[in-house]
Amino acid sequence: MLREPLGQPTAEAWHLPLSRMPSPARNHQYFSPGDKAPVSGIYRAEHDGHRADHNITAVRGEEFPQCRKCKTSVRFSLISGADYVRHDWDFAGPGISLVK
Ligand SMILES: [Zn+2]
Image (tube, helix red, strand yellow):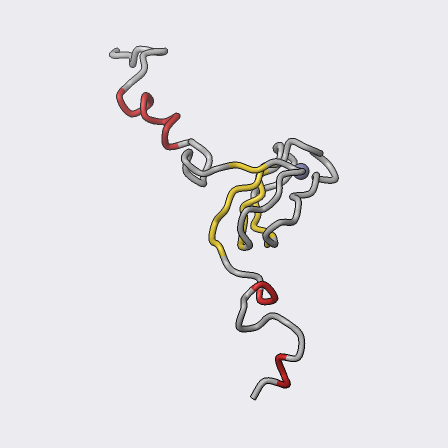
């Protein structure tokens, strides 16, 4: 009976680690708790295994917080930038309702 050799990396297995790289892609910049968000927008929060990745909204200039559980192990990466409405010139500032 023909047996498959065990422990021999096949071409398919060789590529597994790459396809298992965590998304977002490796060239994304990661931010840690205490770092300031460079732009407002949607960020991916990646925890230290206790919770699935999820998206959060961060506002430019505000610090990323620690996680209640994995503390400073959580990482954030930008998914999609979006200006906070109060930082947009056309929506910001006092007395906008007075402008005619
Ligand atoms: Zn966490």
